[in-house]
Length: 389
View 1: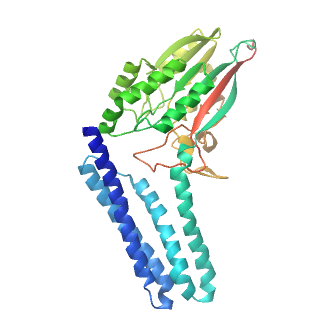
View 2 (view 1 turned 120 degrees about the vertical axis):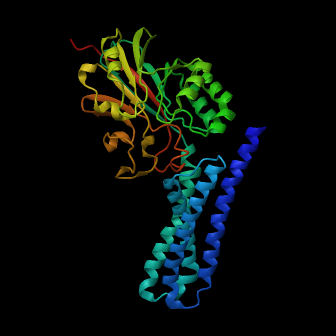
View 3 (view 1 turned 30 degrees about the vertical axis):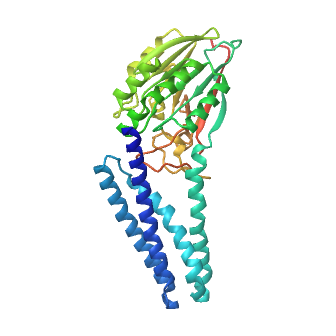
């Protein structure tokens, strides 16, 4: 009951804040419509846009401060900027088209119209990036050749479920679970960032989180390693209750279709990508295939052929979440090349690595959106080849 009330207060607070901002933008819109001097049309547009930005900034600070005091958390600066960008350009575009363009001098009219149309286009783009693409999960399929796996061995299907990063188990998470079931994998790898929520949200969804992991375990063996957002105590508790193996600088060996597979999972280190001792475990273990799970792709920058790791599996970058065609992710969140941070199978140096775009998205510290970067359920098929003498 307390959790439901808090959730209602949280949603009420969020929508009230949005309503206040929209109201201020409408007031600015009405003020601009009332502009009577044709020569001041463009000047008033610029001035209105400036004051809309100031108003939005003030509201963002108020939301951050009061929200923190009320225990609702806060929006990051980046989130505030995106919300401002999503709100102001459409209003500005509409105002320019309706009330200003008609009164501008002819040489200025067409550039103003073009700018207004671009502003209006921000509205559907932002709606798509927040309401459509984050929930449009893509199942990707990649074949990976394992040099130590016999050529006649049955292929091993591995599903990578990275960056679930949810604050509750809802329809989207259940749909992803159904997709995993459909794939009938031999192995499930979860390279970190499982739950991203406030303490009261975690308590509310505790049992659902446990049930989600148990459902995954019922499909195939599951192994995971911690991510950078995972609270050590909460994560350990959830995984222990679900009976799912959380690897913290540890190695586990399982046999799949007669093939010995060694799986190493790292703890998350803020001062470095992993504990080198784990590589020694993998280097000397008796296995046909050696997989290393590290939440961030930066592990590949320290790996060498002597480590004998067949494949590193990572997440963390979310593929950038926002991608510009021809350029790639705006933010890499990693030191690996931009192409690798965008996701997929890559060779960095002499080491193969698969970087998953993840099935979730950032929720507290960055804008909850995806653009040109759909969430990904990665299916890796490990195939054998003759061992090199």
